[in-house]
Image 1 (spheres, each protein chain N blue to C red):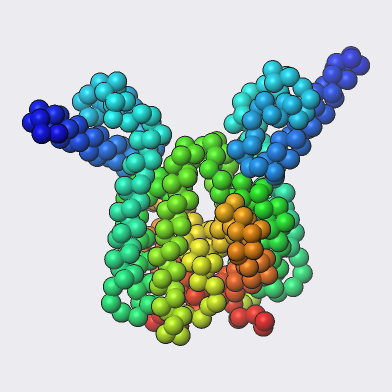
Image 2 (cartoon, each protein chain N blue to C red):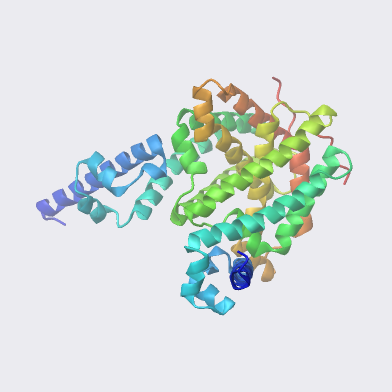
Length: 213
Length: 213
């Protein structure tokens, strides 16, 4: 690898790979995984479809990478809040608000990550990320159990319930029909309503004191 | 259609179609959707693979029918309990216990319905059935809001949270790794624990009085 030309080729390949992933993420953010076709993506990047396949063997492989990168970003953002200062219940509420807010501000992408029907390969990733989210919550729940703030016995099961509740509560409001209804003025539910209902639901569910409105 | 031979053929076709679906459900119950291959199914039914394709154009179409039939059965069973006698909170608890119990007693099938990575066509059905479950809960929640038993404002969003919490709480305990661990004696969590944690989580979340243990 001391051959300068080989190093340059490697760097160029790496840079192109990253540009492909960025374009793929942009496509999914705009139109979901349904909009991620190899041909359209190659056009966005400005390369031949054949070249695209040299970097990603299949659309499934590419979709998995886009899914993982976008999901990891959300997971890290939530982890930062849950590990922050303050009482466990306050951190739980702040984490939920941030998660809902981020989803709301990238609705098409959030729906794609949470619920869009996709390849089984991406579904596999969904299960893994849901476990990763549950692990984050287990840590917080155990802290809150230790301080007596949360009254529960099975942190693992309750963490799974939280992950499910959060994801499912957002599916409807983020879904394409709901977006269309909101844009047409037929749906008045906004981020504040969704976020508040979700926080109340989760804090009650873990046996925390109800937050002051 | 007054031709007796034509009527007989139609009846035979219908009977064969139902037998195919029953065999397909048996395969999914034993090994999930991954075990549903057209060739293995044709062998189970005792027909040629080509004949199978005369009844179901694709594996996806067949999987969707199996999914819908099995899901509808669960939905109906839950609806019967939620519409039964008693206070809304008691019916919610009874519905949750029954749902968890039925899933526990058909773990492989329940996991396949709730979480197994599958064709996008089946995923579409999942979204539809999750909406149907949410609608059931909306009815119950509104009853409980009217009697003052449930303290909440957005029945639609809370119903979605319940659907998500129920599904996700069962994914882990029903998953193939958890089953293997239980069978090897490394996991002691049983149906009673899971069911009780889920009931407590959901009753608290809707602002109901906590049930007496």
